[in-house]
Amino acid sequence: MTNSSIKKAAMILSFSMVITTFSSQAWAEQGTNTSTPAYVMSSDSKNPYEVAGIDDPAEFTAYFSKLQKAVKDNKPAEVADLISYPMNLNKDNKTYVIYNKEEFIKKYDRIFTSLVRDILLAQKVDKLFVNYQGVMVGDGELWMGVRNNKLGVIAVNITNNPYEIAGIKNPVVFEHNFSLLQKHVKEGKKSEVAHLMVYPLKVNNKGKTIEIKTKKDFIAKYDKIMTAKVKKALLAQKLDKVFINSKGVMIGNGELWMGQFGEQVGVFAINQ
Image 1 (tube, helix red, strand yellow):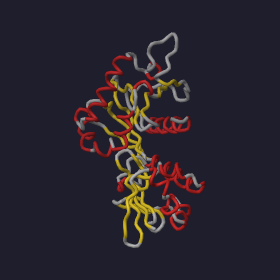
Image 2: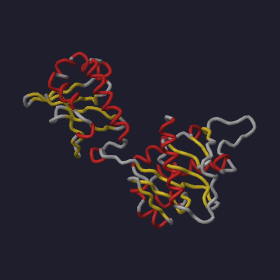
Image 3: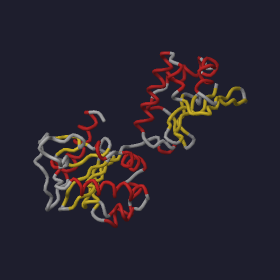
C-alpha cells in the first residue's frame, strides 16, 4: 500500500463524512493527522485501534473475522448485520447513503462488488491501516469504525472497473500488467514478457493454432511469436483506447488478447 493511495482513500472518506452529517455521530476533529498501521503498537498501548475510537482490540479482531466469513460464505443478511448505518457508498465521485439493512441487502452486489469482496478477503488483520477516521481495508475500498455506538463498516469506496465485462476483477492489476507488458517488450526482456502470458497460450497464424504450454517454450520461440507486427500493435496501443468485450481486452486490431484466468491477468491469445 502506497502513501499516495492511503492519502487518497482517507480524502475520499473525509469528503463523504463532510457532506453527509449524522446525528449522534462522534468523530475526531477534521485535520487530525494521527495515523498508525495496526501492526505497529506503541510501547504504552496494546490497542492499535484506539485512535479510531475502538476500545476493545479483541472485539474488533473477532468482528473482522466474522465479517470476512460472512462475505466468504456469501451471506448478505449476515453482512448486513455488520454494517453501521447509515453507511456511505462512494461511487463515480458521488456519495450515496445506505440507511438500513433492507436497503443494503437489496443492493448487496452493487455495494460489495467482486473487487471489494476480494480485497476484504485478502486483507490480513495485522496489516490494517488505522487513523482517526477508522480502520481501512485495502487501499480504502472499505472503512470500519464506530458509528452510533456500533462497530461496523461505515463506508465503501467502489473503484470504476471498465474491464469487468471481460472478467477482470481488479482494474489496477490489469493496467499494471499492461504497462509492464509494453515496457518489457520494448526493452526486449523475453523472460519478463513470458511471465505475463497465460498458459497454454494460443498463437493463431493463417488459420492454424498452436499452443505454447510453458514459459520455457515461449522464450525459445519468442521471436516467432512476438513478431514485428504484434510488437508494433502492442507498443502503439493506448490504454484508454482498448476494446473490451466478454471475451477479453483486445490490443490493436486483435493482435493480442488479455484476460483473467484464476488470479492471473495476462495475454491468452496472439493473432499474427
